[in-house]
Image (tube, rainbow, N blue to C red; front, side, top):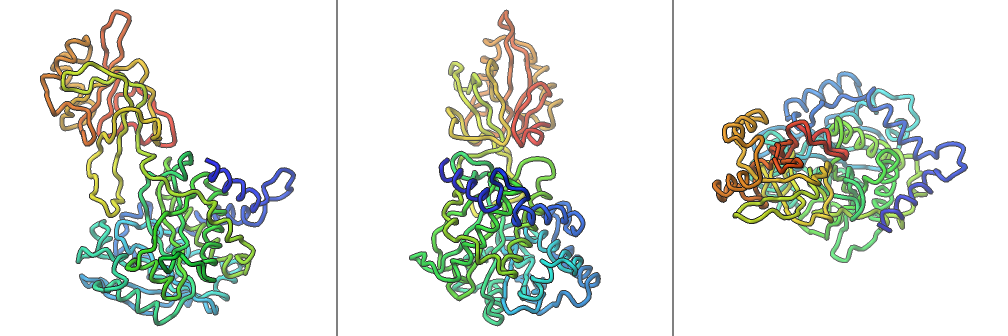
Length: 484
């Protein structure tokens, strides 16, 4: 908590938000300006995960036609399955910057933001920030390094190699292409752009992480060099920009040095690298808002690098960014229920946590179905949506195919829409193991409210990780998405 508050206080100081300040400071002004300009320059699709190789190539061709002379197709790599991987160059400056995205095929948010960045650079020639970027920097951009993985919405390439762990052996053609480009153009800064697990918190008491940052080390000792000092400054600047728009949603990615990883190797090879990981930001149009945050982060930090203002950003503020906290956030938490969990046991007080998987899978075995992930005292765990089930009896029930109506029909056929506790518990016992509330259970959890006479009436259910029935109301930023 102290670390999270310290970082927030530092951002307020750096942004000039102290009481009595007459005008917003430049960083806050820049963040809001870029946020406001994004709808006018947006060319990215509504759903980043729907953008495959064909759509990316069409978008790049349209940008080249719209802004002749701005974007040069320098060369093309070839993926394992023969898809062309474009590498683009913009700007004429002395400082080379390499940005690569979607080396994991199911991590497309920054790819979408890069399209918007390209259009901003082409559509805003009078903007002083754009002039600075194009005159002081040369940008080398690979917007989709792993088109074969993107085609399948999977992390790995067609060889089933994690390209981000192929920097030493270079067994993948995609990895060889990235390494060859870096060796040829010798950029001093790299941007390694990814998506991370959206169910992470900024510290133990922070909010859902929308953007996580890492100044990527170049050796086991995590030695600070002029390059890593600069990427720490970039991380702090991105943190300032994002905190202005999404307070409490910035974290530091906690990762040890990994010699075979590309980010670590880039830093070791002389291209000091900033890792930007996009998480989640629950609420309406979440995917679009995350693309928008990425656009602000990229445009704002590149501007700081180009205009020299980055030099005034304190690298010492980097450790104050709260760390990613794992196993502290999930989709839905039901609190204070009285749970009849199965195995003929009497009801007991319990919280229940549910997870609804998204398009991002990460490197661990993917949960493909919404499920119950934990039962018991879940004080430590926060839900994007939460339901206070005080006074309700919760029971697991194998969900029939279909929706809430099908579930109600199934229960009605057993005369369980309105019942008594003894009958209900007897029905659960008869179902055996399929009606056992334990981690991995993917059926429904029913909620009954007793009346003064002890009769139970069905109030609703959690069905495929979401509230159903209309009588149960969740709270929190993900409440709307948690209801059917």
